[in-house]
Amino acid sequence: MSRRWLGQPRRRVGWTRATCCLIVPLLLSLTACQSTRSAAAVATVARSVASANPVPGVLRTAIAPPPALGNGGIPVFSHVFVIVLENAGFQQVVHGGAMPYLNHLGATYSVATQYYAITHPSLPNYLALLGGNTFGITSDCATCGVDAPNLVDQLTEHGKSWKAYIEGMPGACSSLPQWPPGRYAKKHNPFLSFADVRDDQQRCRNDVPYSALAPDLASGNVPDFVWITPDLCHDGHDCSLSQSDQWLAAQVPSILDSSAFRQGGVLFITFDEGGDGATAGCCHLAAGGQVFTLVASPLARPGAQISVPYDHYSLLRTIEDAWKLPYLGGAGDPATANMAACFVASP
Image 1 (cartoon, rainbow, N blue to C red):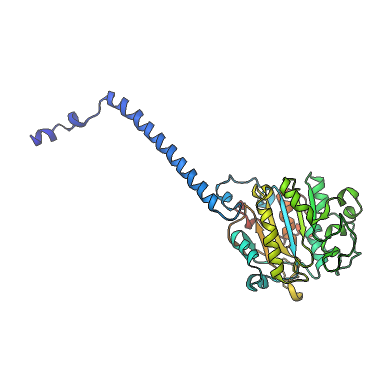
Image 2 (cartoon, helix red, strand yellow):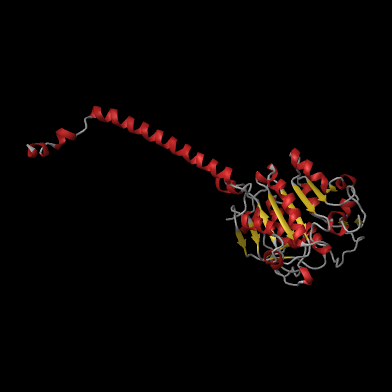
């Protein structure tokens, strides 16, 4: 009996044409249903992880479509924020224990670990960031001015909006060297060193007290390029790095939570120069000391430490590459690398 059953397998288990016509559509239906359930499960997990993620923008790097690229592999940023702090070397920031919030941001986003200031003192470095050159200025002179192309010219010519938010400044485009004593310093407001900003009433309206930033962030009326200069205490010039870090911890979250940042923006936090007259440099143009530079963005490589040699001209070049602007001065030097390695969109 067993042999007769085994000898007739085709008759016992074979599928007729009619059976196939019934089974195959059923299997296809079950497969489609299972795929739909799997996709729903993945979406549920992604939403769960996103809600638990404490830092805005990081998860979006993993699930967002690849961003459009400008020149040199730099993403086309929706907005650029720049904050410049004062007079501290890289090792002092990383190992000094006074700036836990800034180091937390560095562990979350990207840090350029071989980034160098151009020179000493402050003003030439600020001019380098905005104009690609120190223009022969070697002091913090309050009356120094240059008549030269700058980033404001480029932004204006290419339809990009901009605004400089300067803490402690008593009014828009103030020419006072300091106000009040020990809080605002014109030398840390490089926009007023360029004649075509200082002498242009319309452009001067964009050089405003820092108090204007919060309303702009809240309303979503954020310019494409945002420059932030803290006052002489909060930037670490006259007060401790701990006080500077506390200021960052109070102010930066509103930037990270803004749609301007979350939807393809970038925040650079750097120092104008290394402390104690440090002369370390790179790229044959920089000799102002090694400084900590944060690259925070939903497009940044999370937790990355980038050892490519950079300087202030590299930061300027990065902005220019993102928006396909021509290079200013040292930003176009063959030795100046842009900061593409800090972003997930980098080739």
